[in-house]
Image (cartoon, rainbow, N blue to C red; front, side, top):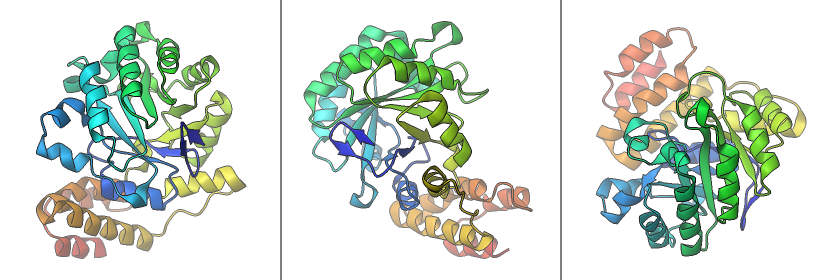
Amino acid sequence: MRIGTVELDNNIILAPMAGVTDLPFRLLCKEQGAGMVCTEMVSAKAISFHNKNTEALLETSPEERPVSLQLFGSDPDIISEMAAYIEERPFDILDINMGCPVPKVAGNGEGSALMRNPELVGEIIRKTVRAIKKPVTVKIRKGFTEKEVNAVEIAKIAEASGASAIAVHGRTREQYYSGQADWDIIRQVKEAVKIPVIGNGDIDTPQKARQMLEQTGCDGIMVGRAVRGNPWLFDQIREYLETGRIPERPSKEEVRAMMLRHARMQIGYKGDYIGIREMRKHISWYTAGYPGSAKLRGEINMVDSYAQLEQLLEG
């Protein structure tokens, strides 16, 4: 798959997820076969204020490339100027978030709220494309509400404004992550534009990955919540699309080894205190569905060191 000047190893992409797709997790997903990984969304305004917490969100590694860095905001001048300001950093694609549903983002006229202002969408993309040489992509939703389904209109504007690709989540902002994703809207977008279209929503098995590609004709797929605690899904999807076979699920020993390795990476990247606390949610995701996982979820919140985590996971 190709996005602008960037060649991807395959068309299976890690979705940007706030609080999840930090550097350690992206590296694990890349190792497991993701064709491209995406950063957590970064506020363009926070970059302009030189916010120190934002610096960590901008950090990337050569080992994870190609990597897409996602900005959010609603001011075309700030987004385009900050895109130019960070362009020399080692990321490959700049993505503009027009799909985030959370109130503190959408309520501020950013994220999915931008879909209510097509003229502003065009201005943001045009100014950003002019400001940098790297490809600019956009991530959108089906629409803001069921009465405001305008993904096709926004996709056409994105293409006309110079975007190199568009990712479409088949839910409205109103739905958040509930209900079923509408894959037909992804098909409609694919038929309406010539730039690559990436389908997103409800891909949690290799079979569903193939179904989305066949039903929508989309060029690539973006996998989000289903890879929390399951970076192996990328390899399973890739293998299934190439050979029709699904690799066996990892053994309990492999899952335990991955959890501990993830914890070591997280601690190395964020320090003991934050690293081990951020691992608590990841451990809950890794162990979901296993016997005794509910008890483990209660115990994991008491863990505050790597040694304690290692001891707990021995059980």
